Image (cartoon, rainbow, N blue to C red; front, side):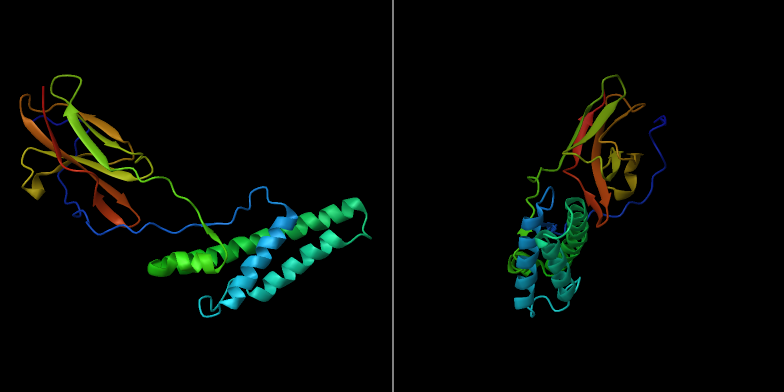
Length: 227
């Protein structure tokens, strides 16, 4: 079979893992365009909730005394009537920026605890009076393979937005032999057309996705005849 520029030498690829994927818990704090009063209210709510649940949150970061101090600074900046308007506005903006940074750190602390204990992750977030970010609807992993647009070609495609991952498209004529799989594309493209194949032959294809958690088979093994 003639080689094409898309084909590379046969190489061993880690076997895909079938372990279940646990969705990550992401804390939502709603800080975009938040008003100073609302920020202060939420910060007090998070701080008091965490303080009342020491058994769940043994070492808050930042420390709760820091939260108390920043909340007090914002409260003072909002209520100080003796300052000139421009100076007061500057003090408020500065206090808001500091408190937002601290609230984000507190949210990250709760998020880390929740993901370390996935069985009680949602409970941790709720106990801190925080919310869980709604994640996008799960999209089924779909891998397709079809005859290419020209003789001697086939096209392999991975659907459902894989561009952020490293993908390894592979083909073979003997799928039962692991060593026979040839990598034809190892980039972040979601589709590849392979040429120079034996016309009339039946080829099998698969897609392996690699991310921070390892290598997984994306979809099922498919087959297509070469026109």
